[in-house]
Figure 1 (cartoon, rainbow, N blue to C red):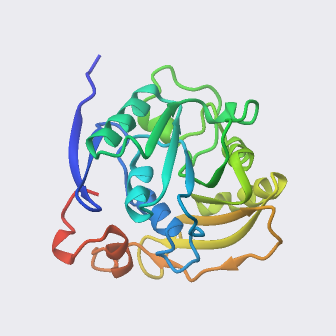
Figure 2: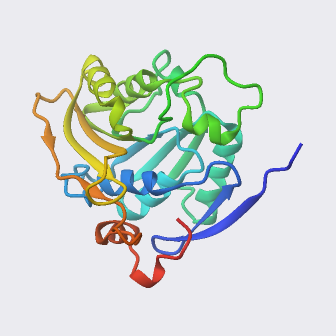
Figure 3: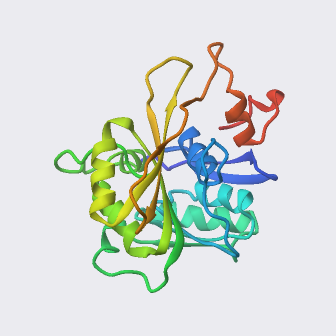
Length: 259
């Protein structure tokens, strides 16, 4: 049995470090979710409150909570992750960045929240859930990468139900997913009392088919969906777009760094 290797990478955002395993490693989806939540992609973003409390469902190694702590410095976060090894890695990432007082991590199944709610409520919930539908039995050797990408214990409805359960009145929900799940997402959000308020599609290159969806909902809100202008990740020559560079807080010469 091969031992999982780890790296410690410099990711920017005020000098943050990130411990990652050699399985599933963070990518632009996580950074887009943070930028969308922080209002950097053209939308309203999260309503700024004093000391907002944010829940991250399926936090993996903690990358979204880490970057959010930088972009929304007055916030505190709770991350939930079913994989105990990833949850422990997220705790270590909080410690090495001196954020253990602001970021807490619990090893728990998102599907359990619908049955037994957490005692606290949150101003916002963010999530980058598995994109691919549950397809029969889980392989015996299911890797961290497989679990991060495929619905295993918790499916899309479970993530949305958990978010609705834990949000306070007029709490906000931010999710990154795939465009082909848009109808499922909107139906599930409404069924749980959350109204989709902003939608943004993301293309890999200009004038290509969108492959990422960003959606913002508000618990108990009236129906009114605002469709934001689409954005693209890279220019035709392969460079990150100016918008993505700004979200990463990088200069052009920094583009070769780990992402």
